[in-house]
Length: 167
Image (cartoon, rainbow, N blue to C red; front, top):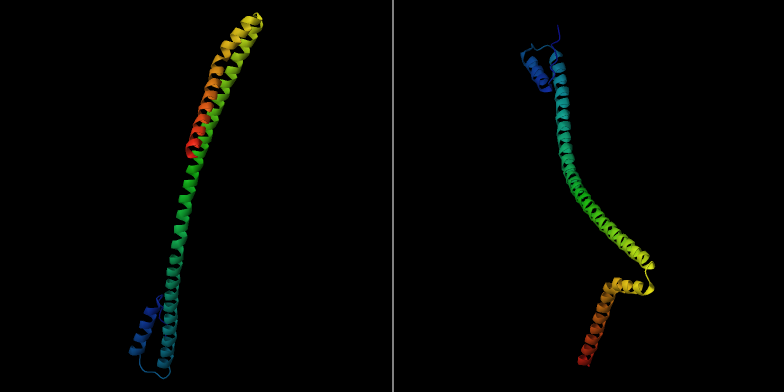
């Protein structure tokens, strides 16, 4: 007798064997043999279903573990962006301060050059004229110094008055 084609699906195979048992004539050992095969196939089918259930459970656990990792990566990305933005702001601030410093240096260099030219020009004048020109150049710094001294004196007077009232 020609053997029937074996189905790919285990459930189909079990159903076919059951049908063969029910429809075949009751020959001596053939039924027992078919029932033994059916029992083996049922065992295999049950083992595959259990394995599939275990795999599904493992997959669910893996997905559950993956979620916190995804959250951690998202937080790390956010923190990275914030740090990059802070770095950009810091670099911009550094550049601004450096530009201001360079501008001040240029102003001081120009002022020094101007003073140097005045001093060179004064060297050719008579000493009395040089002193008058130097005095006029220093007038603004003298005024600033005098103002500073005056403010310091006022501050000391205020402190003295406060200390007297506190005694």
